[in-house]
Length: 373
Image (cartoon, rainbow, N blue to C red; front, top):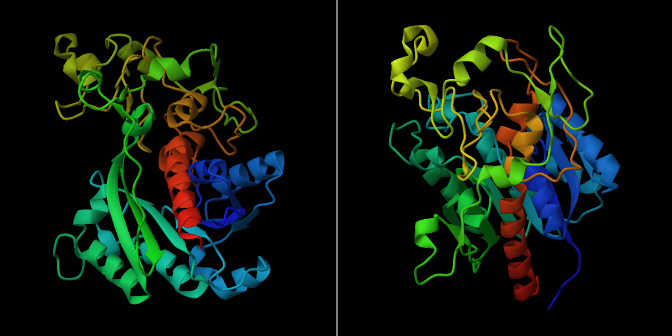
């Protein structure tokens, strides 16, 4: 059985959440390719701090030539163990306009196939929103885009398997569902890992699950955050524990009990609820200490379970499962401001929880070792 160091390349690396987990699964990541400048700064800072030797390419992936990348990394075609990534999901998200391939970001999904065709990795790992499963293509047929993706994998002699995975089922304190596709050359004997956690009411049955992890367990011990400097953007606070809550938002969230949201507080009147409808269940949402978080999202920041403020980027990182020594670079956006490209909250929300990536990465490594390839 081969147990040598496994080599990987990361596409659409973002802030590096999946990369953290894949490294912890004993893969050496030779290259990370990412277009967002702030994410690249995050990747470079952590590669330098950890001395990983990973090369970070700040590039539009469509301009990267896989054969030249192989040459730069001194790799032969077919030698790479793992090619992985999570292309931009907005085109397929059920919370968005669901434009699929009509969105300029939609075709980026197929870049991973272009790379695989030229690099011939032993395993391909794709992460995407579950909306991809129902995304329509040129024929306006549900599931058409995913069918096309699977067909193109098979045309280059890869056999795919896929599963929608809930991060909370694997110990991540977050109710985050994402689609994972594992494709291997020729026959696919990969088995997805079994879940380890469940709601507490399911933990007393036949299967020995651990109860879901609540966010109170992971965000404790950080102390009070510093308030964001009014009128300026914080770039260089290395722990990212910064409070961006405007005073008016503090006043509104103070009326919301733990685990509830502002629109449900109908007794407060229109002055405080102000334009929210019964469907606005994630706006002004105060999380509960004993429960997993809702899916961290780019457009909204959730509130602390007991304090009248938004969660900080560092608390988002705790909920997602980043190690405390991981550094985020780039702006911490005020709730009324805007920044170029991704701010720190959105860098985290866009990424794959490192623990989940590690569990899947370990399963991939086990598969490779057992197949002796």
